[in-house]
Image (cartoon, rainbow, N blue to C red; front, top):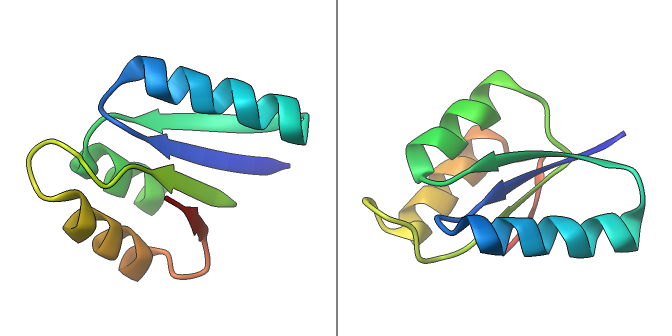
Length: 80
């Protein structure tokens, strides 16, 4: 099963992306994170097929967070 981690600090954006991907891909399991530390924790603890993130995240810069996510799970495909 395809598992996608959605990372954005706005719930409405995560919901919209989830709806679009569900319509396009069918059965998909989603996880959500609203800040970089939460995303890194979920990437570390669980297996994901994709992660989808915005560049503008609270706290640390989104680009730094994306770099850390890619370093932590280099085989997980990303969509930003």
